[in-house]
Amino acid sequence: MERSSGSRDAGPAVTPVAVVLPAGGSGERLGGATPKQFCAVQGRPLVSYTVRAMERISWISNIIVVVSPENIETMKSIIEKYGHKRVVTVKGGITRHRSIFNGLKVFVENEFSNHLLQKPEVVIIHDAVRPFVEEDILSKVVMAAKEHGAAGAIRPLVSTVIASAADGCLDHSLERARYRASEMPQAFLFDIIYEAYQQCTDYDLDYGTECLHLALKYCKTNAKLVEGTADLWKVTYKRDLYAAESIIKDNLSQQVCVITDVKEAVAQIGFRLHESLKSQVKVEAISVSLSRNDSHLQNIFSGQCYNFVCINDKKYAIQETQQLVDMLEKSNLPLLYPVVLILMHLDISEDISFSIGMEELTRIKKFAGEMKKKNILVYGLLVQYKDHLVLQETVNSAAALIMALIKDRNPELIGQLLVA
Image (cartoon, rainbow, N blue to C red; front, side, top):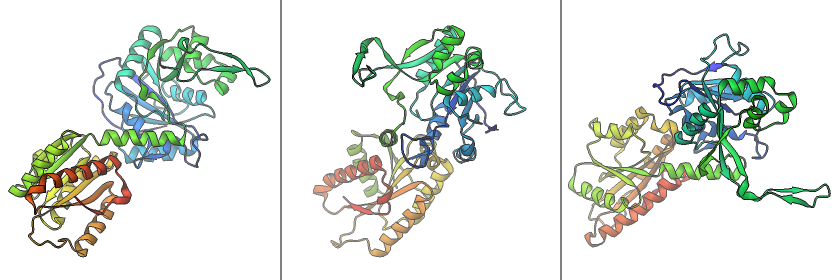
């Protein structure tokens, strides 16, 4: 058993509450050599998103991630790389139920370590490949389990369930309105679910899939069913990975920070851009000198904004941009998700010819390549400030390009210079 360190706040719900995340699947239905829980979504393993969803909830005391023996080191490296706290890795069994049982044992047996964790009053069981679970549904199943002994999230059936006869023909169908799909998370009084696992047969351990059924069968505990939300779905097939990536991209594109210097022309473009963007996304506009360590900018970096537009009238403000990157790195923002950094060059020269030469383009491309290694996606955007009559139209075009870049987050386009 391996544990990552970290402190936690006092919990508002039940103390203590622990989580067991079975993550030992092989991902056969997904296809490919990498188990689905370790597949990268926006450059980060899926299991890391699920751990983070639990980790951000202060009243969860311990997160037990159960993985197959050959993936223990992989999971440990993920915990270290992404700075996960309160996480314990445990070797899984050959089936889902045996893996969950191993996860529960760390609280009561010395089989995995001579240091036992504090036994929780309530334990949550959740799939490592359901990354979009929210605190509200977790709190609801925990409180229901405290009252009823067991609880689980459910969702309406999407398709009608039918039974086939021995000859492969329809035997009967179920009335869909009377049935529900069992989902995760589920929660149990620890003593109930642990006793159920201790008493259940090898057949249950090897072929069963429903934890609520074990609590009912062996402990006579009728679980409270809690209506879940639509985002509790499980990543099972390759198309689900694409859907997960789309949701994460959408979440990351909800806010943008527009940074300008104090020059009047640059600040004016920043204001116009803010007005053009604000109907589509939350916008934070800051007029600062990047040569100073601006506290307002530091506060932005410590928040949840992953998109930055830096407006400058210099041909290529490499020094200021590097200072911005340094501040981003110190914030650890790029560690969790890819950060989009759009370098918006304001061309105010009277020369009609294209004012950025191949040397500058090459430097942008090289710089963007270096930043990609740090999970910062750098794009260039040229706005020509010559005709005041069409300036707003040009800014609107720039806003459309900015929204496309932050929504798509395409690493193949880094270092390109787009013209508004």
